[in-house]
Image 1 (cartoon, rainbow, N blue to C red):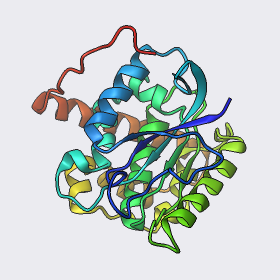
Image 2: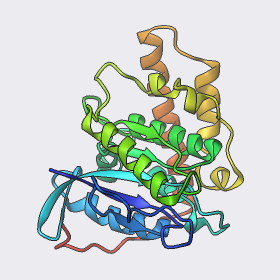
Image 3: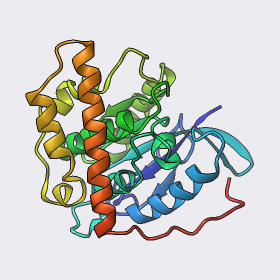
Image 4: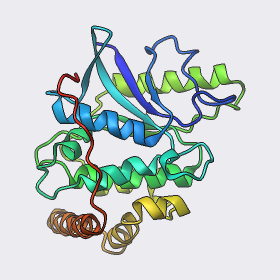
Length: 260
């Protein structure tokens, strides 16, 4: 099956925005210009689908990957990719019983944000949410940070370069090996080099700052310490979610029973 992208791309319809119109090896993706549209559609899809990594479009089945940017320079929170991470945060459960949380973890992700600080903020948050919110024996999909700058050379060349990298990424083994831990991913240079958060990220995903500081200060030296720290991080994140939900009950997303 071919790979179908599900994008959050705020500038997809604007001049010099990232656009898939020059793709040759990937089908046209589903593009959401607002984070809340992405959240509503994926919430419904993940709730009812049997396999989160497969989607039917125009009668054809596709493998699914996510491609996420951070924002288009606007200040509205519905235009920030970190709002998607806030949604995952709200659906986190320490026993992986929330299907939104654990199903999201099985889908490969490309973060095509140009700003390395914002890209790392999304990557660090996704790493924590996916590894801590998955079942113990669940496969977790890989994540790639690849800055897509439509002004680099030309929009056409930039799009073709992005497509080439994405195809290479998806053609490989798109799940992490079983022995890879949350700490292995957090030690990646592109994530570890930028632990600070932009102001909007601090509003939406500020919960990751103390967790990342905790990890960096108490980096596990062996498997036993890694298991203990991961368990403590999971419980701490669950407490944070429960506290947040008591103060901010999430809005109900209407279901579409026939949605495939």
